Length: 217
Image (tube, rainbow, N blue to C red; front, top):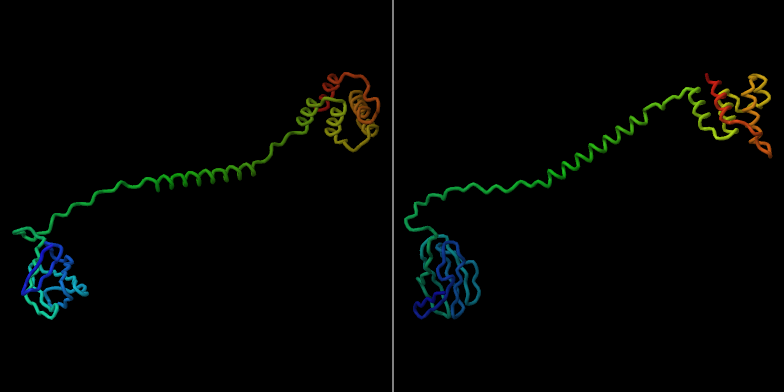
């Protein structure tokens, strides 16, 4: 901070060594009014304080009135920001530092793409699965499987009835159309197991299962 004394008018200003474009605050002991000048710009002026600035790199003079006293040529030193004997050549441009490219967006895009591919693959797989025709099993093969799974006379009789398409026919009617000792024993044993309170008669279920398979031969 520098104090200026001129014809009994004192003032302090800061910064102490202003440069071009700096806001220079000047404090007077009494309210002051500065004169307008093309050498400087009055930014604010209130009571004892004024704020000015200049864009010329050289000292300039201010004038005005304070406490009824007119003053002139109060010098405000302003220094240039240029170095002595500066040739005013622009400083060489430095290329900007390259920032590392963010990888997170690529990771998120990759994850989203993989999820989309997985979703489409699932849709295609389900569509193909729905369109795949069910395996057609020949009646004879289906009959052999049913006989192999039979664990009782009733199950064996049902398998035989389904194979000869007689699920809704009586045993008597079936035997009138298809007479054989093995078929008669299978159907009657099945009826006894289903409807008789005493159950089926003693018999060799395994042997009759073998004989039932001859129907599909």
